[in-house]
Length: 88
Image (cartoon, rainbow, N blue to C red; front, top):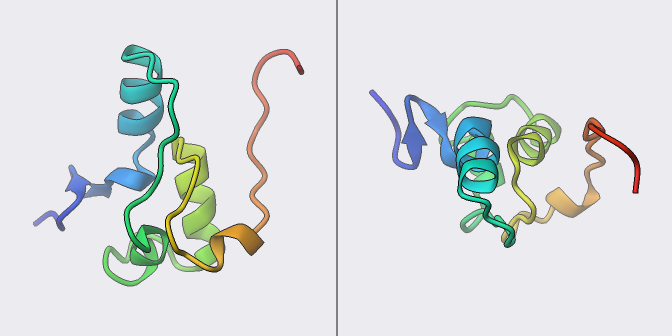
């Protein structure tokens, strides 16, 4: 049973296959990928996909999310995003 907003039981805003590979790479989307209302918090409570806000924010950023709508904790969490390729 998959929850709303999930594909193969992975919430869309935590799914690197959908966001990074499909949308940003395969379709060359260069815009901003933003969560829906409080979806980072939903990774913890509704989807039970992450065990903390830190883990939820990290998962979403690493999946390719650029901005979170409304989650007050998102802006205060430091996420270490791995660096790939040459530095700018």
